[in-house]
Length: 114
Image (tube, rainbow, N blue to C red; front, side, top):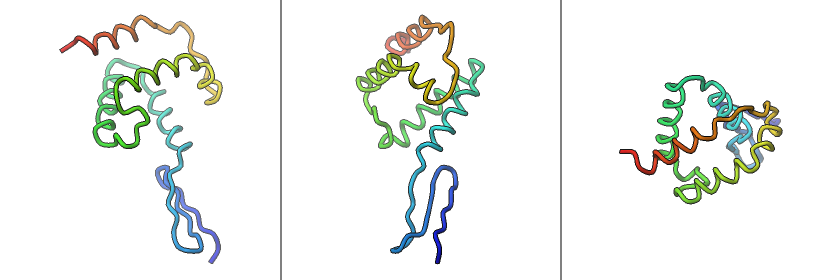
């Protein structure tokens, strides 16, 4: 039997000599994530994104690289330092006129808001 490879919702399966090999296609997952993020245009879109992110944290914490707040904030910091590289690597335009104060307001509110 020849090689058979299947891709479904970012999961790939192919037959190998000893059976079926199932693996996650991370580049596909990144592409799907970027599509969802690029669709955020309104306050409600952003709130839906936050709700989905919270739910993903609850249901899939083992898949999160940064499980605690300290490592999450450190990763955010490091990403901002290198964000130009992210946009270049994903062939997206560099954002202009970023409202940095709004991000600071949102993060600080997360510390004190009920």
